[in-house]
Image 1 (cartoon, helix red, strand yellow):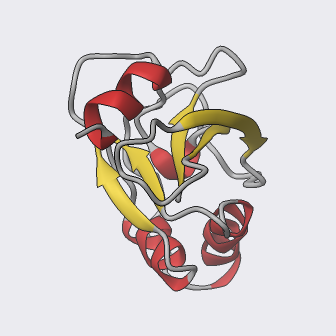
Image 2: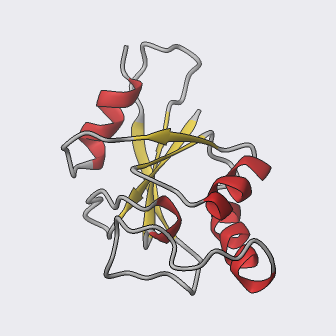
Amino acid sequence: MKIAIAVKDASSEFFGNGGHAPRFAIYARKSKKESEPFLFEETRTNSRTDRVLDIPDEHCPHGDTHGEATKEHYDMAKVLHDCDYLVAKRVCQNSAEALLNYGIKIKKYTGESKESDTIIKELFTL
């Protein structure tokens, strides 16, 4: 199982808006045993070019459900094609539809931590 967490940069600081995150920290569980921990695997860059980087917790500034805006959302989801979940504080409707199209579930995180290692343990540890 693979989990993507929306992050700001290589430091893996949590970034609330999943679709606008500059990067994604990818964690994987190598076995099917639920008792096994998720381990950091890599950081991937969000391929979207229309991100608003200075407002990480705001909703998308557009309401488009077609055209170039939708393509950007699908490009973002394609980067996470092999992930089972995206962890974020929020995602817009376009991002949610794109993620679901790739079979990626959204796991909302409303806790206080800004550290992706802590967040993965809070949400996915028995």
